[in-house]
Image (cartoon, rainbow, N blue to C red):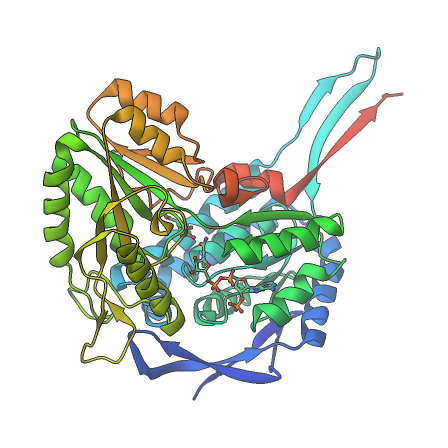
Length: 479
Ligand SMILES: NC(=O)C1=CN([C@@H]2O[C@H](COP(=O)(O)OP(=O)(O)OC[C@H]3O[C@@H](n4cnc5c(N)ncnc54)[C@H](OP(=O)(O)O)[C@@H]3O)[C@@H](O)[C@H]2O)C=CC1
Ligand SMILES: O=C(O)CCC(=O)C(=O)O
């Protein structure tokens, strides 16, 4: 079995022990054994990132561009292999895996350009003859803790801006999916980066993640994952006065109004709720439907969901891959049970599927006749499970859509300019989609939520600069 090491200070470093990376589509398929870093190794990675900071922070925009552009080009050249590995370790379908690999390449391309565009401002002073210059400097060593559901895109949208703005990096990917980040590091190891600028430390969150979170040599931590872990990280990192950025859960509403184009609405619901096995923080988990279209919408959606092909992520024709692991599958099944016990009606799916391949398969579940106070409508499930809430009119739909502790993405299907414009302004979400699925975002614009979904400044696009830089104001009296 091939062993994959950590990358610390420009060297591949053996782990204290190795953990098997298992394919959720077929648990007999072991992808490889990935090194688990110990505490000392994580500290060494942080030291190396600190030592490399001066070199990288003062590198030229051209040097940063060259590195980021090289990484992007290599990702594009290897997108098929990267996509296949991603689908094999995470379970999203092959087109989704390849699409995510391409997205990582596009992110690096975008930030290659950003490295050249990162300028400052000159302002006149209120004092005669004085000039004020406002520039942005790198924040320092950035620690990154990433989840399993986007094994290459999320690391890419944290690493690429960090490098573009002159920071150094220590990243810990989710233990469930180390392969995609390892392959990204294989590319980065050939990109001409000085030793120590990027460091990969794989292993469990409670060991590796804790060292990154608590180290006073890490100036900023960017995290994506669950609400509980996010809050813990926020407390520790803000407690020691460092910067923190969190992307956490969602309970994203998709509102369907009577005047919606039914084909568009059903397609938005299928894609938003069930593609990528529903394992997206932007998934449309609450379908809020006005009474005039409700029955037809539920009937059409049920038929579409029942027709979805669930299977091995790498097999042609699969539309819904497996759930990522046994624990997550059990959580998804438990939520279906809870919803039914609380009075919901199971319109389709909701059970474990025993396919020829031994994986974590589940029939996508649609639960009708739910009410906003049920647990299924308040807690993030993170699987192929969506619920329907019937409402009287637009006003009630908007109120129910906003009635959540989360605020990541929100969608509306309507042909009315009046309602779509009103929803766009009044939705308490960071991202609003009109006649589009709540999931699936562009790579060059800000990404993030409100309320309990996010903390700190936005990720992605040029808005990422806010997190990865510190502002310096210089006053100059030319003599
Ligand atoms: N918003 C999103 O995109 C995501 C949301 N989730 C939600 O979270 C639920 C649980 O998923 P799970 O994978 O356990 O999410 P976690 O929040 O536990 O994991 C996210 C990352 O944090 C790491 N981590 C865990 N504990 C700590 C810690 N004490 N200190 C620092 N880092 C830590 C994990 O490491 P490791 O797992 O390797 O131990 C992983 O790299 C899902 O059901 C879903 O609801 C999950 C993934 C993504
Ligand atoms: O919907 C998307 O494209 C991104 C979703 C995401 O970032 C997540 O689920 O963590």
